[in-house]
Length: 279
Ligand SMILES: C[S@@+](CC[C@H](N)C(=O)[O-])C[C@H]1O[C@@H](n2cnc3c(N)ncnc32)[C@H](O)[C@@H]1O
Image (cartoon, rainbow, N blue to C red):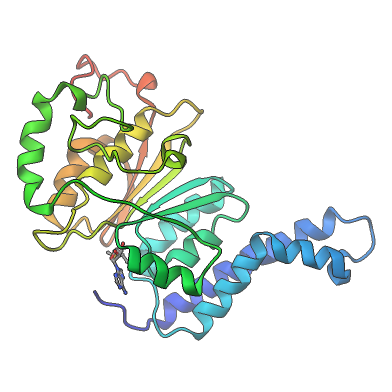
């Protein structure tokens, strides 16, 4: 993994966080009682205990760390702009990384939940950023099974787009059945897929994450679309699964190795194919 220092990105992240905090300060000062709330100790305590605390921590972290997020400035900017327009929202992120504090800080007042396969990595990240919400998850697949899973899912009725569901769907090997209830119980406005690892045969691969993100998005009951961001689309499996489940017609943007999809709820789709295909 290339995690070189990248001053442009550090500056972008620091400015983005400053902009968010600046906005928060303006709103905060307007909802005060006419006195200067920001120098009032009690108000500042409240402010600190909210989302701003994480943003301050993020500024400190990225200003002093030599390790920056793996995604490029252009890639991060696409998700940043969507988050800016719909935050606070429900934001589900596959994978913990050097970008986690940044993603959580971009969604002040919202729910940002990270799903991580490696329990030791969860501990390592949470040691430095204890406010992040992260859970360890187990995957049932390996990257080496990607071709077979793609061929066989069509003949498994429980994987069908007409009755697709995730929780307890053990018959469909692409369904992520090992997630905590908190994931199934919420409708996610944004899903970022930058994990699990998918660069060696025994790694879990992102097949289940992509399929499950598509199913969750299609099952959405709230108004609006689900934004799905997929990283590493230069790789064969990510690309093939995106084409199969997230669909070219839903692709709204992309740069570098990142694609952005807007997936409408399935009840809102008339595909003329009788619901036999995800796309
Ligand atoms: C492809 S990386 C994504 C990295 C992330 N976008 C970032 O900027 O750091 C995703 C997975 O790699 C693993 N990983 C990433 N960095 C790691 C590290 N320093 N040590 C151990 N595992 C790591 C974790 O399992 C994580 O879920």
